Amino acid sequence: MPQVETHLNISGKRNRWVQIGSLIVVFCIMASLALVRDKSLFGYSFDDGNAGDKPETVHMVTESEVINTSEVGAKISGYGGPVPLEIYVSAGRIDSVKPLPNSETPGFFHRLYDEGVMSAWNGHTLEEAAALQVDAASGATYSSNAVIGNVRAGVKDALGRKTERSGGFGVSASLIVALLVIIAGAVIPLIVHVKPGYKIVQDILNVAVLGFWAGVFIDYAMMLNFFAHGFTYTMAGLVTVVLLVVGFIYPLFNRPGYYCAWICPFGSLQELAGKISKRKIKLPHSTLQVLNSFRRVLWVVLLGFLITGIGYQWIDYEIFTAFLVKSASWAVIGIGLLFVILSIFLNRPFCRFVCPTGTLLRLRIPTK
Image (cartoon, rainbow, N blue to C red; front, side, top):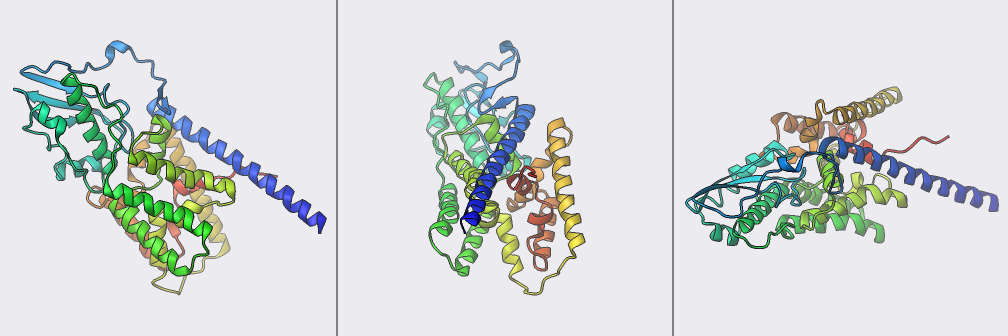
């Protein structure tokens, strides 16, 4: 018995070091991608661009001016990073607000236009705009808060007042509820012996709240934004950190794949679909090996796209964006529906055979 216990202790310690090594590898991968794409790491810029090339922020608004928020809103991040704007002012009133080049998913801005966020300040004086309370667009909370924060910062700077560089805490009902759902999935199963019925409830909440309502989940766009720009003092930033802790830190405490199993909204949707039928297709072992190899090869290819900058736009079309039905690509929605249908007959096929995000979260360095 002592020999068995000693063997288990050695095995446990080796596994812990393997997990720590894997986390370091993942950190290096994401840090490298952030440096390649955004030339910054946790908010520190490595761009050697000339200071003279930086856009000038308007401080005195005259009859007709354009307020550029690239500098005053540099620390205000959306889902994919900073969201600089140009605020067009004529005769002391705002004519329009237009986004400058950014890393947000294009469909998010369509939603902002559709729900009137981008035109909310039109016709208002700068004083009125500074005090105006604008609601975020549903399903595009990160982008909405970034736009609202940039307008507030640009307008206040133009009026000569202290700029709100943090963009406010960005509290919204959807993000508050989303945080509670994430905490429930991350904590309750660890401290209470939950029954199968609880897992169904958690899956439904993951799909309804995290997926369709708040649109929060771990994907490459979110991870790259965090590694490039660091933590932002907003509710969205807090949600991001909690998700990443579950995704990357939980495995260090013998909880590998916890995020995928308990929180991921698309994983939950597949699991719910799988309950429709008890009859499942049993794939041959050789087929499973081929599909697992395909997932790994696909992951390497997609990482290559990010590193080289060729075809990096795939991160805007990860399957999770299908939850944002008003702005998602029809192709992504169609593929998402296909995998949900397959889930009726196969156990979580996207998670097991395709998901590049899940592959990164489950990455393990090889051991002898």
